[in-house]
Each structure stands twice: as C-alpha cells, then as structure tokens.
Length: 487
Image (tube, rainbow, N blue to C red; front, top):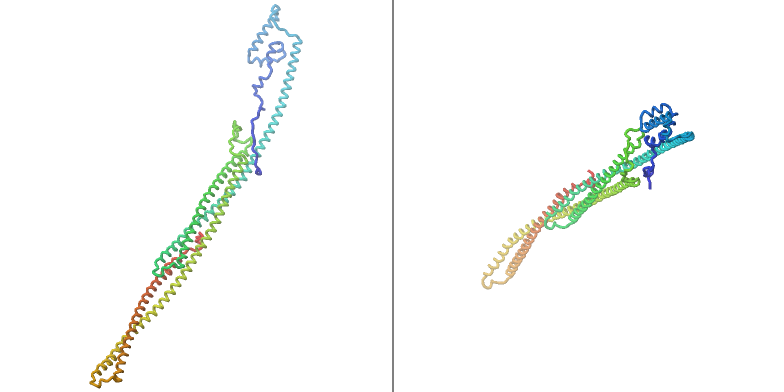
C-alpha cells in the first residue's frame, strides 16, 4: 500500500543513440572535394573569383602545386603545336555541360540536405529542450513530493519522540517512587523484627505464642512479600526504561537521517540551471548506492514508530501495574500494622487486667497473712492461758490423793476434777491442731504471696515490653503517602 504523496522509483537508462551534433572537424570531412574535378578540368577554375584563388593559394598544397605544373604544361602545349601530342585528355562541350549540371545537382542536393538537416536539427533541439524542461520539472516535482513525504514522517517521528520522552519521564518518576516506597518498607520490617526480638524477653508463663506474636509474624511475611514484588517490578521498570531509551535512540537516529535527507533534497529542489555549484559528474547515473526502496523506506520509519508505540504501551501498562502495586502493598502493610496494633492493645489490656487482679489478690493475701499471723498469736496465747487451769486441776487431783483411809473417796469433786483435766487437755490438743493448721495456712499464704509477686513482676515486664518498647517503636510506622513513594 503506497502512502499519499510517495513517488515511484524512476528507472534511468543510457540512450542507445546520440543526438548530439558531430564535431566541426567531422562535418568538414563530409563535404565533397572539388579538387580532383579541377585537376581533371583546369578550365573550370576560370569562373571563380580572385578572392577564391587568393584564399586557396594562401596555403600551398601538393594538389595546387600539381595543378600549376599541369597549367604550365598546357600552356606550353597551347603555344607549341608540336607539343599538343603530349595531352592525353580532352573534354568535349557536352562533358563540360554535364559537369556543370552535375555540379548544379550536387549543389542543390547538398543545399536540400543541409536545409533538411537544419530543420530536423532545429526541431530536434526544440523537442529535446521541451523534453529536458518537462523531465526537469517532473524531477523537481518528484523531489518536492519526496520532501513532503520526509516532512510528514519527520513530524510523525517528532511527535513520537515527544511522546516517548514524556513516557520515559513518567516511568522514571514512578520508578523513583517505587524505590522510595521500597526503602520505606525497611523501617517497618525492622520494627516488626525488633518487636519479635523484644517479646522473646518475656519470662515464664508470659512467653506464649499469642495473637500479637502471630500477627507480628504475619506482618514480617507481608512486608517481605511486598518487598519482593516491589523488587520484581523495579527490575521490570529498569528493563523497560532501557527498552524505551533504545526505541528513542532509533527514533532520534531516524530523525537525524530525515533532517539530513531533507536538507539535501531541499537543496536539490532549489537547484536551477542558473544556480551556482552545478557541474558535471561523469558516470553518476551508472552508480546506484541505494539501500532501500520507497516502500521499505516508509516501512522502516513506520516500524520504528510502531516499535516505539509498542514500548510506550508496555511502559504505560507497567506504570499502571506499579501504581496498583504501590496502593496494594501500602494497604496490606497498613492493614496488618493496624491488626498488630489492635492485637497489642488487646494483649496490653489483658496483661494490665491480669496485673490488676494479681495486685488485688496480693493485697488480699497480705491481709490474710496478717490475720493468720494474728490468729496464730491468739492460739499461742490461748494455749498459754490453758496451762494454769490444767496445773490447778492436776494439782487438786494430786493433793486429794493424799486423803487418809476412807476419806479417799471417789466423790463428785473427784469426778469433776478428772473431767476438768481431760477437758482442758482436749482443749489444748485442739488448740495445738488449730495452731498447726494456722501455721500451715500461713506458709501457704506466704507461698501464694511469693507466687503472686513473681507473677506480678512477670506481668509488669510483659507490659513494659509490649507497651513501652514495642508500641513506642510502632509509632514511627511510615504514613500512607510515604508507603506509595511520595515524600
């Protein structure tokens, strides 16, 4: 399919016949030589003028010398009849007349030939002049059409180069944003890893695999996944930029060639027959340094433009993918960041509640320990108080055993004293058991107090790690504009 304004390739061939006039020296040799006739008929020179003889005798030739010798012989023969026998040739009047007629005919024929040659030559010169003018006009028209084609493709190339430069600038900016966003992910990743590291310092029962730790691990994995995708797209952006610059280089090189060709063709288009700097270039028509045809010439530029448009489309698609990637990764990291913060908040609340409960239980335990200690003191005092009544009852029984004879009666006082001693001993035994229980309970309370205090210290440590260490670091999480590459 030919483009509008394109010209066909002209075929030039060297003409088989030459239409140039022969040289003057060649034309001179075509005239008949009248000297042999004059040599054969000396009397034919009598009608010629003196200027002819003067002009002809200006340069003596062997034929003129021979003619003079012949005239001398004829003169001698004329004047000396005895020598007439020396003449071997004589012309009759008919010969003379025929010779004149032949000369007339030949003169007329020569004149007609010259006139015909002159007319043909003038017509040939006019035809060739018109043909040369038309050919030159057609050539100028073809060069002008070629200039229009060059201007058209040059404008297309210029437009495509501008679009490619704009696309390269846009892709470069997106690439910078991607690099900044990738650099911004290092901070959150380090914070997440440090949070995991700090939470390893939890002690005893608080060293659990809770929701906070699960979400922190998910956050680390999410950030690393986002970084991996960013690096892949960054590599693609670098490769696409190289392809874009290569396409731009091809366009600019083609543009430079078009500018040079336009300058040369414009100079050729403005050349006239009166222009300076024109000259012969022998054999230039036989030289064909062409590397392309009109179709391949336009196809080459069209292919460059199509290749550039394809690269621009790929670059635009990649920019859209990077924009979507930046939005997606920032949302993922922010969502996971919020999830971790919520988990931290819940866990801190749980630890704080547990710590408050422990503190409450510890306070109650301390109060109970104090009361148990007071109970033990009371039991000990009660035991001490039971010693005197027991001594009195046993002393009475012992004294009454000293009654004499029949007075040693098992009377009611005896039964009452025995019952009193046993009752007091039973009371002392129960008080001692209760004292032992109280002491055991006190030991249990003391152990519980130690356990509560230890657990309270654990909770305090966990609360410090989560609330002071981790949450204070997580306040430095980059904002959404920074995660998408904006400063």
